[in-house]
Image (cartoon, rainbow, N blue to C red; front, side, top):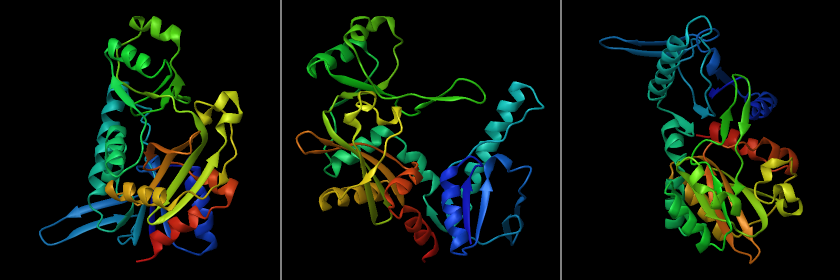
Length: 309
């Protein structure tokens, strides 16, 4: 049986669950926000025995770790709610250490791989071409970098690209180009570390999804629309299959293995000069829309990985 760690709004899991049902493969879906209301997790230690059950199931062939969402504690004050959420998060972190089975991917590896500076360091080490990059909050350093790169640089968050404006609403923080006006008035902004990079002239953008040793690549022509030239996520874009060079495929596999991942969603740029540039890897990125657009069998590769010993 496969254990799927997720939440109720994870539509990528819905996509795979439909295929699991079609293939009559047994699974247990653990929606983490319902951990205390709809699931019974029992952990027992005694002098001779250790018991760990989720809804009376003690053995899982593999675990697909997607993401967690913490429960809401609405009937207590904010301080108590924050405390309970922190304890619940710790409970999950402790729980994952109790499994001795195949993961896609192990949470410890996922959390480590979310470090974008580590990604760039490893990508550079294994031979990827990466953009000229600055992580700084010293304003003069940013100005110097701006001038060094012919006044053409972009800025993006170091970690989280989602900004919660209310309990129910999240906004996406896009990659943006820094303007002359922003640089001229840079001292009026808060000093805060962000990723600042040269603005690479793109031919196309590529999302390469790695599942174990399988590589699935799709491209988007982000340059045909003025709204998506810097960040294709600003509008709904259609992806198409693309075959990338074996050397780049091998680097994508090597990168995921260096990060101890079984899965990785890698963003690449094919430059106007025909050079492949590495941007980042999402260790648990979304991909279902790519399969819908292209027919690439990513879901089947995930299921095969989770079911084959």
